[in-house]
Length: 470
Image 1 (spheres, helix red, strand yellow):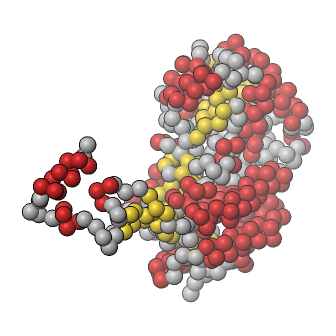
Image 2 (cartoon, rainbow, N blue to C red):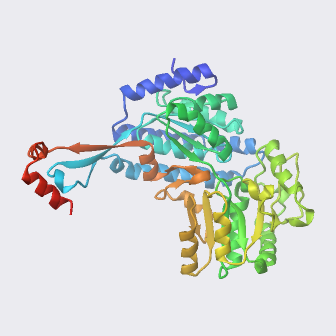
Image 3 (cartoon, rainbow, N blue to C red):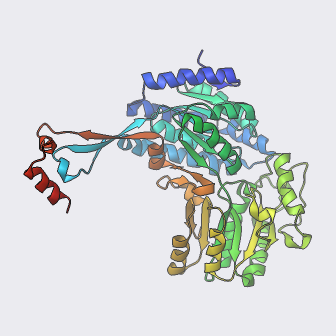
C-alpha cells in the first residue's frame, strides 16, 4: 500500500517500487500538473510556517524564528515564484544547430523527467535544503522520495506530516529514521540522488549509489576562505564576514571558514569584530537571535578544536563563556593557526574564525590552491585587476565579491561544489536541467542527400566531404 511517511526498510522498499513503476507509466509531461504541485508546495509552507519554525527552534535548542524566516521561508517562496515564471519555457523542446552536411535535417533538445528523484536533507538548514531541491525536481516533472535528517527529528516529523497532508503518496514520500534507513535509502536505484552534507558522508553516499549507476549531485561544503585584499575597507569586510560567521552560529556549508589577510591588519580586524558582536548580539547568553549548536556531539567536536589550541591563540569576541548545557558557543577568533591544526584541516561548522596571515594576494591564492577546492570563495577589495587575479587563479564551487553567502540566494546562478566540495549544481534552470534528461533528437527531412553517402563513394561525395572539411 502506498504511503507518504516511511519509517522502516520494508516500507522504504515497497514505496520505492510503487513510485518507480508509476514514474514509468504516468510521466508528468504537462506544465499544468507540475505547476499544481508547486502551488501545493507553496500552500504547505504557508499553512505550516509557525509549526516548521517552532520545530527547527526546538531541534537546535534555540534558533531565531526571524532567521528561519530569512534563510528558510523567504528563499523558498522566491524559488517557487521563479520556477512558476520560467518552468513552462524550460520544458519546451528547442532547436539547436546542425552541421551543414546533414541539412535540411534539424536537431532538437527535448527535456524529459528523469522519473524518481531521491533527496537527502542535512540538519543545518532542514527547511530550504528540503524545499529547494523539491522545487527543481517538481519543475522537471519528477516524483520525489526525501530522507530527512535524524539530527533534526522535530522538523522531520513536522515536515513529513505536512507533506502527507498536501501531496499524494504517489508523488512525494518522506522518509523519517536513523542512519541505517539513510544508508538503505542511498542504495536504492533512483533516477537521480541529491545529497547535501559532509564530505565524509558524501563519499559513502556515492559508493552506495555506484552499484546502481545512480547519478548523484553532491553538495559537500568544506572550508570556504575569505581573501582580504590590501585596499579592502576592513570595517565593511568585518561586517559581512561576521554576519556570515554568526548566521546559524556558523552552521552553514558556505559560511566563511577562515580569513586570509596581511598581519598588519589583524589587530584592527579583531577590534572591529568585537565591536560588531557587541552591537548585533548584545547580552549574547540571553539573546534569542543567536543560534545554539545543534546537539552535544557537535558542541563537543568544535569545543575540542579550541581546547587543542594554546589559550593565547583563541580570542573571545564577547565576555560570555561557552555553555555545554545550552550548547551556546560564543564567537571566537583563532590567531594565525598552524595550517596542519585541526581547526584548519576540518570544516568548522561553528562560530570559530581563524585569521591566517599572508604576505600578499599571490600568497593568499597559493594558500587556497594548496588545499581542497572549496564550495565558496569570498574576496574583498576594490581594484578590479586584483579581484580578477583571485577569480582567475582559484577554482571554487562559487564566488562572491565583497559579500558572503548571498550567491546561494540567486535563482539564476547554479549552486554546487567542485572537487572535494561536491559535484553537480542546481537552483533555477541549472536545477531543472540537472533533474531532467535533456534528450537529443535528430529529425531527418523528407528531402535529404543521405543516399549520396552510401558506397560505392562517388566523386560528388568525395568533393563535398572535402569542401565541408575545410
